[in-house]
Picture 1 (cartoon, rainbow, N blue to C red):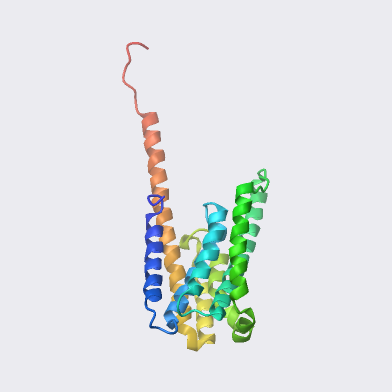
Picture 2 (cartoon, rainbow, N blue to C red):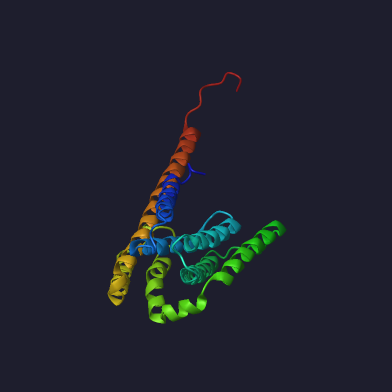
Length: 249
């Protein structure tokens, strides 16, 4: 699995190392502003991957719930921060799911292929109930009322603008974004930073993390595509290679 997407795994390991350095430093009473943006970037990436990922959906859902809870549970987190992260992750997940389903139906109509029935195995069903139980436990301890008092609708819109613009503009990686869409994303980022000047650095770090993840994802996609083309070309070369004369023929 590491050989298939080596850069993505290295990026995940580097992210975990940065998180651990902040968690180990227990003397800090509140996380710095750049780390809050770093956390928002991670949650956005996890929510997008939980919809678009190619591995089992139970594992994707588990990672989204557990990592979001982990980022909100260390030494300088509060129930208010956990509520903020939870709503943020859920909102991006829903937006990504809506875009994904819309594109899937449109592609299905274009291809006019038979749709496979949606089935959930019994083991996966029980696994999902465990994930829901864990999420329900964290929902009990978070302070959702305080979140709505702390964050206004305008601030929610600003925080969700950047990841949602990437969701609407891309399918796989940055190669899907043309010049027009890139200009729209830049304008959205500038408007978001200008609207919350006191949290500009957090917005910049959030966008930088999402862009870095998509760059790494694109590099891994290029590597896998090149390997696939190399395998196909080798197979074609072997098929067209002249065979030696066999006396038994």
